Length: 300
Image (tube, rainbow, N blue to C red; front, side):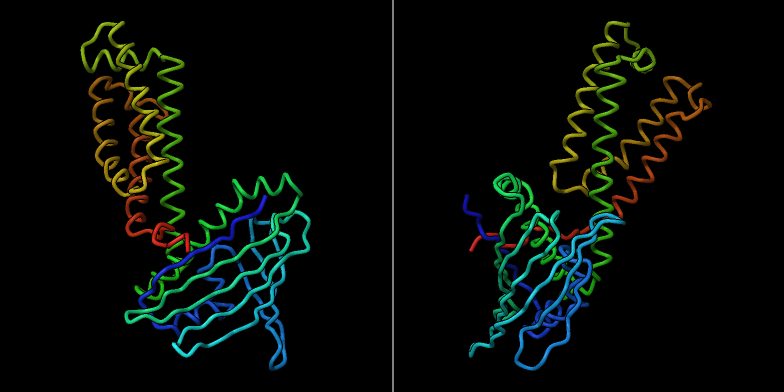
């Protein structure tokens, strides 16, 4: 199975020198590129390729380390620049064995077109190639594109990569959390368990019979599961956070009106919904103008 190279291109409203420095300086590069935690240049003599080592921390006590060689830097008459890259790792557990690629910087009237293309050999034989094709390579392409957009926002708007990534992972981490919460609340207490307290609260709030309450709980359970799934697929997370800022207070008021005694129960809906409201507000505050991989071209 022949692997398809990863290609990413983005337009940045900054001159070639600024984009070049941000991507060629190892300290600056490791700040915005999600694929690297650190890059260290090794000593070299004039005219020799630049050797370096890199590290990507995956977990607190687990990291992937490798080597690289940057060479073939060229400056064209039209002002464009490019550099070639050769990289790899000796660690057996790394999904990447060895690869090559390049950076290219093309000056435009209103900025710079910055692009990269690279390919590599996957580890672990045929099984590793299949896993790479359908999982790891798409993740690498996404991480590259997301990193390019972080660089774009850094050079154009001045927001640091660390701040962008903090907002990004806060917003998407909370999105996964709320997806779990809604699906759990829809499945277990309602669809699977059909908890008596759920039926009782529904019947008290809407003046329904027991049979009608069961049907209403079932319908609401389905809606909650679907809303949880919606959190995973809908891209405009800020709208969902805004919706929850309205929904959670309404749910709290409705629960108290239907059964006032629950307000003094341990771990009651009042405190539970208050905690979810605060987390929703944090997500809303961090979800404005998030970096995204969709701003990049992924094909030549």
